[in-house]
Length: 298
Image 1 (cartoon, rainbow, N blue to C red):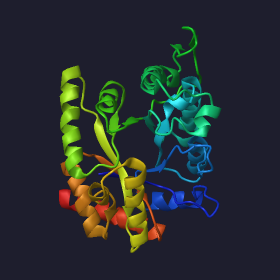
Image 2: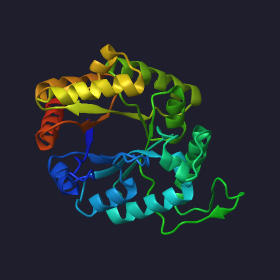
Image 3: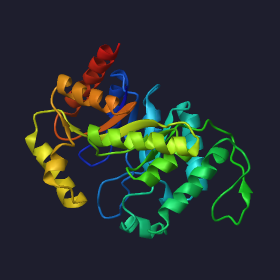
Image 4: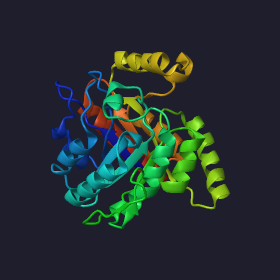
């Protein structure tokens, strides 16, 4: 099973790039950077710049957008940035994309991005991206049909389509190498992967790989667990009972059980943000849990 996590924050609220090499040494498959450009004072740096900086401090680990709000940005600009990042990193990009979860945030308005029509814009961007990255003459949305060619060409990275909806599943089947739902229990994931297989069969396309995202508190920090559950209840209108089932907690054995449950439900990868104290301890715990799952599977 592939695993990834995000970098911890510095006291200033920026991703701590000094920890990127630590994740690489632990054998993580990728490090993820969220897209949290809100413009309301919430800490969030441009993920392209952060991943480029992480590329310079590592050699092997994947550089994952987790996930990039594609309708916020012109697709030609995204293609140029991803193409450059592929070159400077040696082809390590994992391109997670989504419709954007904060379309009414001040940054979206300041950037001139419309809150409506995001799914349509995402579909158009996903259709154009492969050709742009490969250096082919490609018409881009909003150009009046005019084609552009970006060079030098770069490998098209794995595209993971984020979102739990059926629309996201269909988008993943049509355009992506993977489907990336988040904040789901193993039981809910099993239902989703069953539907994903039905959609792939309906469209006559391969079933995308599945990478499930979530949050973990792998240290003795009850306040962090309670705070995360409260956020889900208040910000996402979840029931407290369901929200309490979502954070991954415990030691290596307990975490391995959750990873195995996700694998049984159809996931090939898991990406967990590590909340609360003792980030290095938590990162080590997740790596040990993956090793336990791999040993049991072998």
